[in-house]
Length: 298
Image 1 (cartoon, helix red, strand yellow):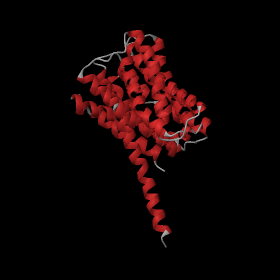
Image 2: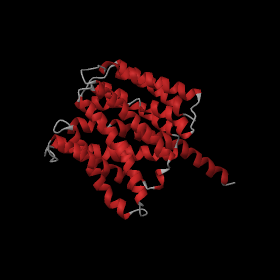
Image 3: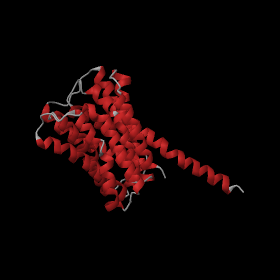
Image 4: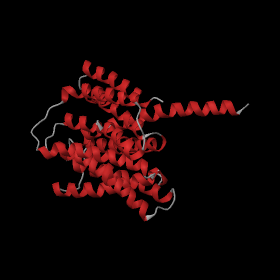
């Protein structure tokens, strides 16, 4: 008699878990704009990324050493590889493209097409076949992203390789996501893996920042606020929820939530920086929501 109510309660919890994780993922993923907006007013993007990853790794380091199993050298190298791909090449590639004058709106659009690349890779690499409904939802979500981003799109005067860099950075993160799922890196506790990844990224970002100047952070309130935001929300929340979701759900379903980042970023900009909201943004948000619902629902 007690098995049925307990089973029903567990099923309800599972149904509530994905909406909760998806909401946290979208909030964390879209919040990177806020931290960069504050911090990049005071320093180069590479310096901002260096301090973001260094502080993230140092905060996690005591917990990584004290809590969890002893990590093998192979596991360290494995996580360092993900640090190169999912932290340094992904974030650094977009930062370099922006510094080469690729318009920010175009960079953001390409970055937010990440779920489309993951959907394409999930079947041949993971054997996760998307249904017709899920492909329809993917198309609808992409249309919504295009509607949201259309007004900010321009092509600029950047060198051709810089445009290719944005596409390459997006594909690198897509490959890292499916490899993370396939290689079952969840055997390493999340806080230990993220610690290694961010410290790996900090070394590489530090070298890049040193080529542009020095590593001394500007002692300003905006830089401190932006860096704290990037560490706590855009790194700890976004990456932790993303990796946790990959352990629990199909990779295409998890990545589909990222389609909601552009419209939510517009809401951040309106709430914190008084940037105007347009009818096209709300229309794009509605279309994107419909696409994500079609892609993610069981």
